[in-house]
Length: 198
Image 1 (spheres, rainbow, N blue to C red):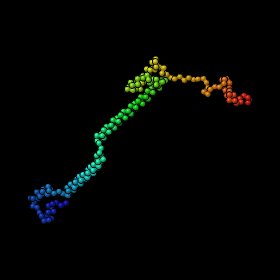
Image 2 (cartoon, helix red, strand yellow; image 1 turned 90 degrees about the vertical axis):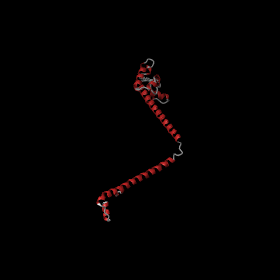
Image 3 (tube, rainbow, N blue to C red; image 1 turned 135 degrees about the vertical axis):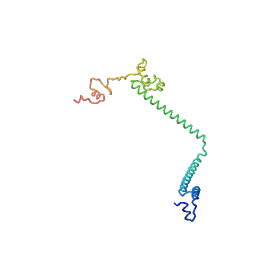
Image 4 (tube, one colour; image 1 turned 180 degrees about the horizontal axis):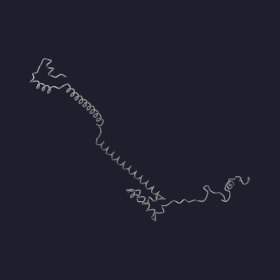
């Protein structure tokens, strides 16, 4: 790129030596190079593009807001607040049911482990509210069941259930037990006995 002084010289204009510095200073203050011009143009193009993007976003926002122009904001806020309250109540109820289920599982497991014979009767004797609010439910339930199993008025609700073994055939015994039951059955049914066939 040619210096401004060289360009002037080519056109027949020459600046005296004592005025060259002032001339160059004046040119630099009032005129920009092509590189400066390109930088400024690039910045302006970027700014223009940003404005276009912002205009588009603003138009989109206006269109979206038009859909809400008839909306009652107070009613909408009230509905949101009601839904938040309802959600909180549902979460609380769900949490309560989970806690109740877990407590019941621990209680039933502990009654079985302590050889309780009648879970309903044993449960009726326990202070369930105190056990539910306990920090150590399993240990406190075990202690309460132990106390019940040792108390005179409730120890009969605990222990291994006795299996009564009966004497008799599950089908039944017909006739006298000393005879051949097969032959007795044949007689009752009116069939010939196998003894007569011998």
